[in-house]
Length: 209
Image (cartoon, rainbow, N blue to C red):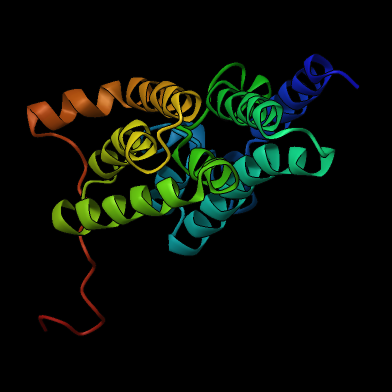
């Protein structure tokens, strides 16, 4: 099969996989319409905030797997390295677009950070490790999920440039960073206005009494 057909197959499979609205499904299983509560976003953060920590973690894991599978299954095709990167990138980008603009949610969706992390684990694992480290540091320093996610996005092109020197991977990282930042544009405005939601650690039972 030609590389063009592999890219087409990865794109179609990636979009359909990414479009599966795990956040909506998990919240619905708990009797919550996630599109009508909190930020109205079906991603893991809003599920965690509106339904509970366990549900949010499940959604994050499932969304992470969407990206990992979309970018990981082309490894079985036995393609040359340059063609493999193109097919993996097509699958991952399609999965992120499917997650962000799901046909099952009438074009709505999540921000795509967990799906991006999962896919990049298969495509550029060392850069993901760097990005996740930055995410954790920024989140625990500020308690802003959105700011941590934006910083994660910025690491993608910079990390590829520093670690691999690959123009193709740096370009892919840059494109994904722009998409993540675009999807966080409302969060950026709230950060600038000082109205962004901050995750605050809940006191243990009995604390303060």
